[in-house]
Length: 299
Image (cartoon, rainbow, N blue to C red; front, side, top):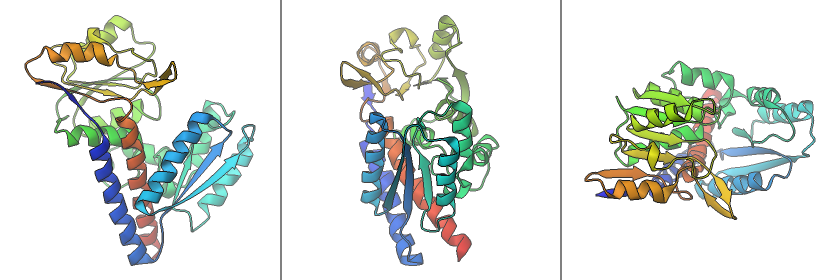
């Protein structure tokens, strides 16, 4: 009883092993090695860490990794031309543009994501793939990695989302919005909150939720006062640096103390060791699936 820590290591490893098996199948069936191209604009240190993690994951599943580094002050045209070349390169099967994208503004960044061939869009950010998610398409398409990873982690721990109340804090195009669509497609009842949501209303929404998912980017933002009697699971997507240490959006000790007093099990993800691991694993899965579909179209 009390708190169950939803460590993602085993679940993440399972996804990567599945991706590795698919990668080996593609090599033998088509004589092709799935290859991921990552475009990095600038020298943001956090982005460099994320890119290294993706490179290591590709090595693990047996895929190739190609990195294209552009100056931080690269123009939109230069970035779009780079993506055009990758789109038309038959040896590239997945394309990812690491955020933030240099000095581009919000709308320019959307143009960059939309320029990626939807068939190679391993992040699931192209408008066509977003539309497929919004309309709950029954064909396979790359789903955004973090939302997909969150669902797989909840499922791994046996947390049913059908018919459950879920509050998501944060409405970004990368996590909050696509996650809301994904969970609604799976028959959850979703409340999507954001920076303009009144704090008291936000706490009330959370207190009436079975599952709380925080992707707000504020260290320790979610404490025990957000937790209601029906709250059973908390997913922490936050990746914040405080005094040189990585921490999440959830005040873990505050929430854990409350959960420990309960008669039933409650679940919470750690930071690090939680959602971040799932994001990279789901990227590997999207890569091999994109490659397989490209091979099927050409055969």
